[in-house]
Length: 378
Image (cartoon, rainbow, N blue to C red):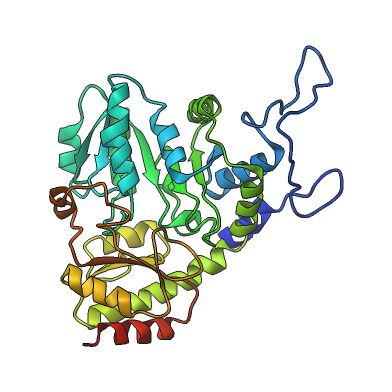
């Protein structure tokens, strides 16, 4: 019997404790573990290398993404950095031209110090990807939908092209979560998340997650995780497990509200970036690889001043960085998530001065629309 994703969310995060029968995973507050045999050590020896509570959460990530191994890190950027540090001097990466600002900073300012270089490519153009492959190229890095313009990449086609050229495919699945999109099933080899967002879902912890399709790739990620040590703390691992149990009901409700809000903005004459709209260039591709348009949309209000007035007038959402919480969050990417980009780079990525990103929470969609409507009134 194949379990539905709804059932898998609960089964993967509810592991009965063999000692007590507790339905919730115990929190193992221990930095070190006694070894009963001088010559053969047990599964756990030092918490950086592994912790029983974190292992349950890491196994859940692997199970939800249908991967072989899962890993948890202190932040999303720690997860992304650790994956990209499996590459070395002289290696080259192909990266979709629209990526999160932190990933952009890592690629431009940190990895070149280690001789790991990259090229940003329009991933909507397969020929552009193929023409950008060099003999030093080792991987392609997809972020779909992208942050903050929600650009869509065809995971299946890009993965097929990459594998024909013996390249690894890495996919950032933060915006969709494994409940709405499963990149490993579509051909990716490694999935990364800012688990701070929808997986955690309550704006109360930071975490990063990785799932690998094979044990061999998992071994490479684990080596970096253990060597660098940016692992997720045991309390946050437990909180993440608790949060994932409600991922399905949260993101389904949030995505339904986001769809209604995106349609309202579009009818109001605003330029809307949301892959659940038929007018979106990536609509058909996204529909073929994800269950819905997700809970994040962006809207261009035309100018920085219009965006400022809108933010000053809204009453329900918070104005903040991050996304994926139960509260609706409005962000201004040019000064928040993508503040590292120059004006020219922002323009090249379609991040205009009037662009706002909206992560829709669990509030009533009609209440949010009424609030947005009054904020747009002169």
